[in-house]
Length: 74
Image 1 (cartoon, helix red, strand yellow):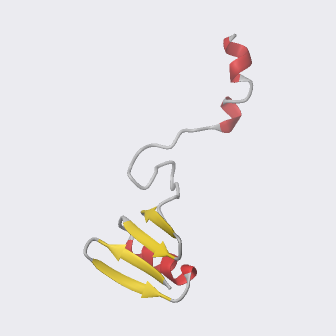
Image 2 (image 1 turned 120 degrees about the vertical axis):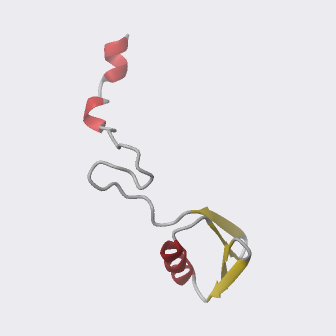
């Protein structure tokens, strides 16, 4: 049994997949408790669209520009 806790309310689910899907739909900070562990966070906000993170911050990280950087700085 997995419990999704959001503020003062909680909902129970039979498996972790259902609990995660529900947490993604809520799109708020939640705690998922199950068995011997807890998972916390806002689920489903790990995407970059049009170069902008979900919180509005410009995403400009580029792996290609980081290759060999340490050698160049020496």
